[in-house]
Length: 160
Image (cartoon, rainbow, N blue to C red; front, side, top):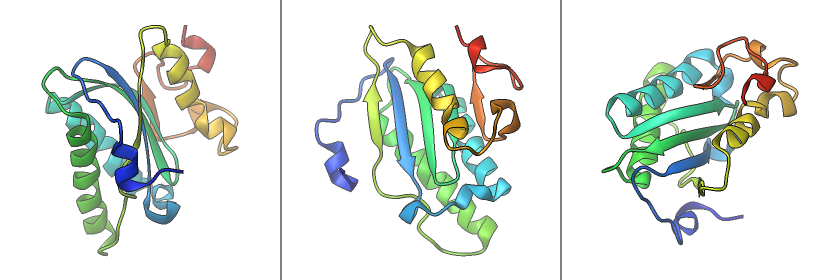
């Protein structure tokens, strides 16, 4: 399994491409069982969109990791987009917890979607994570996800 700088080997960042990113908490600590910590990360994903760095298609925040699908904006850099989001959220989580801990593992896994890959198929995989992990029996019962293709409370079959 690759870690840290090994994950950057061969990384290519290009604006307007769609990226599926996965990043883990430090030592896979289940920080996002804390509702407020989870919302901090989610608000930072939205903030990265507001800064015109990304255009989020969807995400699911699991107890110890994040799956995020977004379009990188034309002038943005992938490492900056993910790194700044992780950095902002880590600072805010430490303030919330009144601790000074490592929140995220270094690096992240990324996959640039090719034209033949279906964005909706990847999004179905992402949103189904809480179901596969047996955290809920219906995605509508999980609080930490969003997808432009699914209204809250919808069924995964609605992504078509």
